Image (cartoon, each protein chain N blue to C red):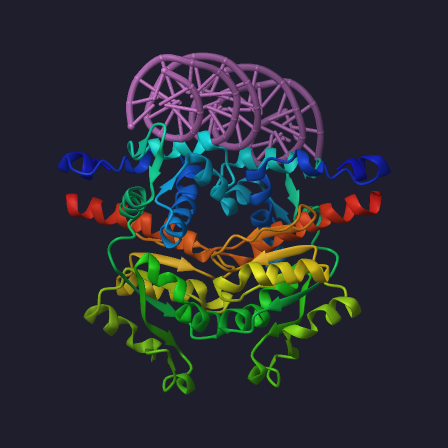
Length: 226
Length: 226
DNA sequence: TAGATTGTTAATCGATTAACAATC
DNA sequence: TAGATTGTTAATCGATTAACAATC
């Protein structure tokens, strides 16, 4: 934030962005990609709001944090806005990733094609089970954990995805930090502790499931009451 | 909500709960489970807040929506509070689920052991690829899509998990609704439209990735500026 | 009792929304 | 021009936080 302000170019207003707004931007972006797919050149704040489940005014407000991209009386040019959003969200540069843990989830993530459109390229998996070292996931090798440090020496790694059993989460995070990881995407149901210079995003399916089950319970009770 | 009020028992205050509070409850719950694992009988609002990344006062406020479970000067009894939370979140009753789409992601979800502690039991997978029908995921059969209606006739299905390619998402959702699904957990990057009586929770890894990449970009720029 | 921590109130903070002048 | 939609202001709404009396 101080950084870009100092350099004076691109004004990403970095940290001045409300959290909920940031969480909605990817939905706007996805809506714009769809518009481009379908040949729709102009998208309205109404359309965008719908994609994120908020009123049109909210969508306009959110976008106003990044600048002025719309034309009053017309709407937003899908391509222009998509480019700006991609730029703002940091989706324009290619990113290299690895997956630690070549179990079912790790392999599923490594094989997931949806990440490529965000510029993410998963280049290798790591595991401790020697029987896996011959396998590949698509073109991606499964390498022994012991070679993790080596890999970091020889390759750029922007994002390290953790998909090991919960009990190993912290140990793996420690090894990754030691090897030089700067960002972790943690799919285990265990919070990991890392030094402040490392970014961690937790993706705990259990807590997400709990929310779904809560709503399920509410539905049940409504039905019972009828 | 009117329901439980009318019956006069358990006061879940259902919908009167702020969204952010609901999202934090599973984190408190997880923290309590850990405490129980480790033999820690009392947990403070300080501990709970930390687990969800909020101040202690926030944790107390959140819990106050459900009732009074703490002892001033002491803290919260881990077991008592865990039970109440499980009850409130609807984790106490067993839930049956199916997974539609037996690709890598579908199989990974079906094999994921973490769901069981929330009472969720995945009982079958469905796919259109005949070559998969002989396979099993653990003890779970992979069945043809054509038998979906049949399955719903013969089994209770509380939650239907969608793990098919994006282009098929809406068609699958339609078939599930037709078969009688009441709640969908959608792992495709495509929003699905369903009638209002069906609950949908979207789990789009792409939008989550976008948030991680945004933070990565911020870090990069800070470093560049040094 | 002294020390600790809850539950709740009241103040603050921040996000959402409605409304409208400006613009196409 | 008439109709539409943006960007922004100001009002509303809701969530967070600090502080403290009550309680153990």
